[in-house]
Image (cartoon, rainbow, N blue to C red):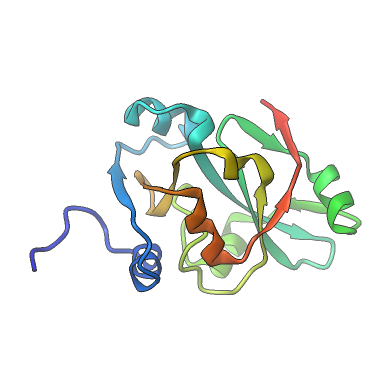
Length: 161
């Protein structure tokens, strides 16, 4: 078996172990380029690029929210929907500790610490999503159904950018 021409990250091992079909998509990473940059490099709509956001609640308990690249998360609405007082972005060092991935390369697949995963409800409507493969400059194209391996909970907390 020849060596793949893409990184074999914990996320890729997770997908392989669960026999999830994926297509690797490498692109030149740019600091603070975000989903607009990756979508442009890959020639795909930014709406289909799904970002993995690590947040924490008032008890400093972590969670992951999967959101369309062209949308923001209303943390106020998320807290309300989940019955929590306050939700905010996790500190990058804490996010790295929980997930094992660097910010900009965070995948929801193959994380070190089990965290609850929430997915924006409209992501299920897409035919394919492009989500981080566990390294900066590396997305994987998968069916949204691949997210079911994470046992996510649906939420409606998107706001326009």
